[in-house]
Image (cartoon, rainbow, N blue to C red):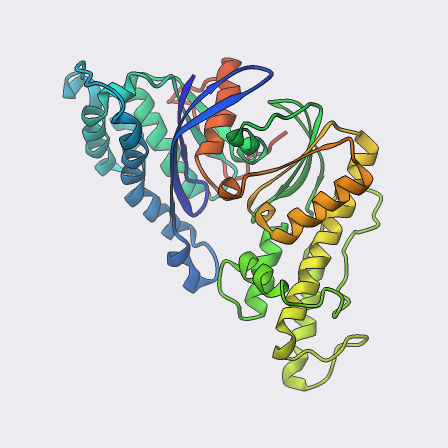
Length: 392
């Protein structure tokens, strides 16, 4: 099955085309994957500004889509069966009320890449969770394209994409599996019996891990996005120098909380102006930036590892999957690998490919494939964006 996928859940505009096959053993041949990042736009604000993200998605989505189609199209012979402009555009116009300029742009793409479009079996798009204004740009584009091209449409949960990103390297998941999703907006432990069947067994009660890293970086005066900045400084720091708290480390459940850790960091840094150390802590100075980043990072990792280990002992899954933007963290990958080797040697550990840990459309194509296999398609007139969409 050939899947075209779109992703606009936050601050990356992405499109991908993939040939996917198999049922128990999945094979993915990625034909193209294009991601346009907005990091430079949002960096001065210290975080993603929703209306700016929406504006950039509207501006970039046609160009990203064209790039995703261009390379695969070179391999095909010309295909002359383009419908008349009236037949092609009229039904799709209803989905581009707020992006009218895209209708003409999509019309041009339809004519230019008609041979490749004829080979596409379905269109997948992220419907949530995420920033709802941003999500709507992708959803409306996918609804219009599905109508223009007469293709089945699949709405995809963004978190499913992070779970199944491993298939992009043709790694195979053995079920039942446990997934740890760690990103800017989510920290969840999910039991998976098969694609589409999920049970959330643990989640954050406040800040997600990625959000905590970004807020910590802001407190320390580091540039956005904060996670990579803290990780970089942590490589040269002492992970035991500051005794930061590990919230909910020993709680009976599998939930997470990182807001208290962030507050402890704030109280630790604030005494610089007062020249008085926090009780029980060595006085902080900018000379200890690396040590503080390392101590903060280790506090987050200790909680993630402890909760995941507890879930592994309780549920005994065949596979542990770790995905989401935070899974790119070098120390996280190192310490989780060590934990599995030492304590759970019979559990398969799958870490999302580094190039696909962030938001991308290739992972959405894989997740869309599983839904398409089961005939779970959406009608263009009923598909909706949902910023708070749950996985289970």
